[in-house]
Image 1 (cartoon, rainbow, N blue to C red):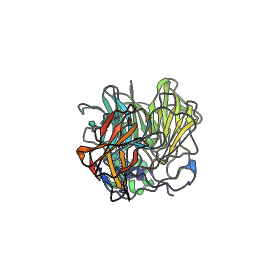
Image 2 (cartoon, one colour; image 1 turned 180 degrees about the horizontal axis):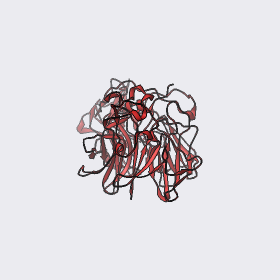
Image 3 (cartoon, rainbow, N blue to C red; image 1 turned 60 degrees about the vertical axis):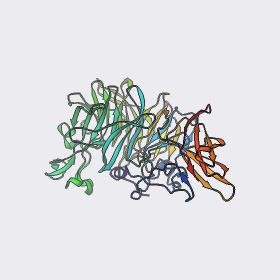
Image 4 (cartoon, rainbow, N blue to C red; image 1 turned 60 degrees about the horizontal axis):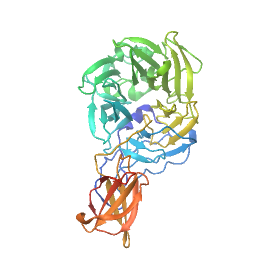
Amino acid sequence: MRNLSRRHIIQGAGLAVFGAVAGATAARSSVFPLPASASAATPTPSPATGDGPTLPPDRTFVSTKLTTPHVNVWSSSPSAPGFLFAGPMGHGSNGLIMDNQGHPVWLEPTGAGVTDLRVQTYHGESVLTYWSGKGTGGHGEGVGVIKDSSYRTIAQVSAGDGVKADLHEFTLTQRGTALLTAYPTVRRDLSALGGRTDGYMYDCHVQEVDVATGTVLFAWKASDHIPLDESYVRPSDDSSADGSTAQKAFDPYHVNAVDPRQDGYLVSFRHTHTIYLIDKTGAVVWRLGGKRSDFAIGDGAAFAWQHDVRQRAGGVISVFDNHYKDGTTGTSRGLLLAVDEKQRTAAVKLELARGGHRGNAMGNVQFLDNGHYLVGWGSDPSATEFAADGTPVFEATGIGNGSYRVYRAPWTAQPEALPDVAAIQGNGSAMQIFASWNGATEVASWRFLTGESASTLAEAVVVKRTGFETTAAVAVAPHVAAAALDAKGNVLATSAVIAT
């Protein structure tokens, strides 16, 4: 199976494939029609399992047309609390919350392009956030989305100054702002890298935007501060991105992470292999890694093609070290660096690796509240949770064709939308009823209701919830509905009544 380049993977983000509709005799209370897409890209097999078996068909359901990948899980000891949050590419749902068995909890229902799905805090409340838009040329153009615990959109955040928010970063800060990146195309002399004197390139921007007002509070662009010759890529490397036209814009920097500090911002450039500290005036304070590093890099601490750079407590900087791209060698890892900014040294504090996972694009490292770490392997469609000493304790594989980042977090939600219900007639006096409630986290059981009319429904059976979709056999009736019950038997919500 062929490797996917970062550019081709990102170009595939935002496409959703709809699943097969179960049975022509199935009736539904609500269905979200997803747009058909171009064929999904061929998934890259995980080196952790060799070539491995062919991935099973996507999960499909009777009560909804939503689809999701079959995710496999492994565990050796308890993981941190919470669900997993991912953006699987090429398998229907580009935004996915799932439990520790790999079963879906929430599938983004519209087919919109989604990256960086996670739980963040806004005005003291837990919110669901993600970037949504169109992937193009190794980046994206869209907006940041904030949803409350009923999945209502409470804010959309756009970049300012005439540029569009890129898919690589949507981080909320404690001051009610969002950090964004952007990739506007500009004319530039590329001769320093062997390119055209009148070429086209992506000039990476970093912005801090007030969520409530949309005011741009900080704006920075790479070309004002970073010489092109810091890049490890050349226009001649890729004829589809050689800078000869605006449609083939060259990408010398490739910004992919911004993290706030008291004294400014940490910014990661994949194509310069460098982490930059930028102060609040926009000046570059120091460079860590790359061709012009201000730090002495200890044994094993060098990184390359990195993603998801974050400032941690105690002088630690975490990095997802992709460490290779197309045509190069290396094994990816989560990397915790002990960084002494006074002595200008960087050393390995902890390395998080497993089974030869290689993510040539994307990826992240998350610090969990119980001291564990979660590593998303990006284009290698897997995520691994490690104990504090670096021992693997949990792994999910088959997350679509890859996921930009993967997170774990507690999340409690009751959707504004009603549950979905469907019925399939049997050959005799029985029929099968199916129920689901996309995004609900507190459903313990389902009460199935049947009757001669919508006004005469009565309880037919109560069954324990058995995953995203629960089913039960009942006597044939002209009308059915489903009520979601919590652990105490209280009704959380009831579906619309459907005719069978």
